[in-house]
Amino acid sequence: MIGAIVSAVVIGAIVGALARLLVPGRQNMSIGLTLIVGIVAALIGTLIAHAFGWADTRGIDWIEHILQLALAVLGVLLVTRMGMGRGGGRTGRTTT
Image (tube, rainbow, N blue to C red):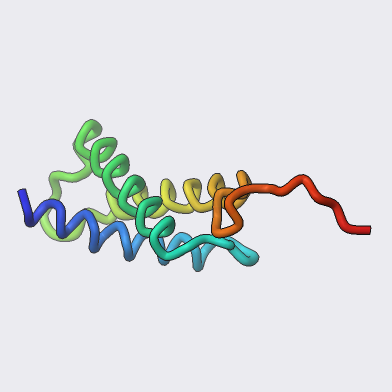
């Protein structure tokens, strides 16, 4: 149980960081939010991979990890497009 939590955090951190590197432009996200997006993407990716039988291979489960990364990229895009990063949302102010 503890090993699963630690591996989810480690994989989530790696997947979240890679996703931020792959998304073009500046992402105004905290490290904590990046970690949360990565962990959620890793868990959902693992569930999907297990459902389709892609996670039961000998060696490295490349399809599972690619799926996790793709979900993390989508998560980073959603968070940055919704303005849920460090700024706490859009203020509605415009500059002229």
